[in-house]
Image (cartoon, rainbow over all chains, first blue to last red; front, top):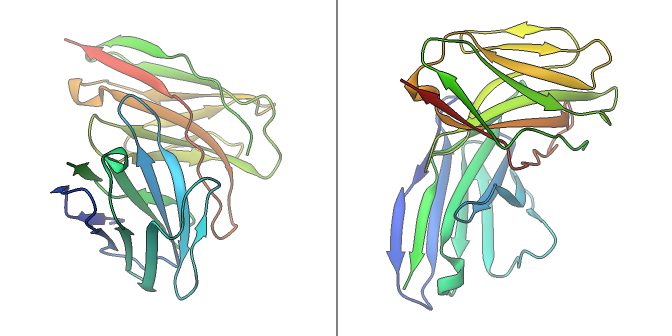
Length: 114
Length: 112
């Protein structure tokens, strides 16, 4: 149990385009999901907290208009990187909070912007 | 959330117990200790968590000192697949949206 999936697992896009990443909790409902970013040889950095049916809460320094988050159901949150640039290339990871208050992580999405 | 201190790296022989320490001297009474691990290029995997009692599951054991200022994660019989970065995180549980703040963790290398 407690499986979280992400799609796609990797994506390569051109500079200026937008990319959508999906995060799904497969066997449990998650009122709250989180989005993290991880650069090479660094630890995970929280980008935003996503609550079902309401606006996401962004961490300081994360542009909400660039990283659009939608949490329309209890099993799906999406992160859209708008007008992507090479510096947005990173490993994006989501997590979903279970009813037992434990966060379970997805496998991550590797984004490369050319 | 309270900060944690972990050694940057540790080695362990395959088949032996791996004991990973974590200091959290400023932990508050309502903060839990969580352990996650991250194998290269994958998302973190939940291992175990506890408040003040020792905990055990199919993956590991968590030993928390009586004063709660430190803890040890024990992998009883380490395998090569346990090579990963292990993160010790303290977090207030029971609050919707309570965050996990990742530090640098401990790189555990299990050697054949």
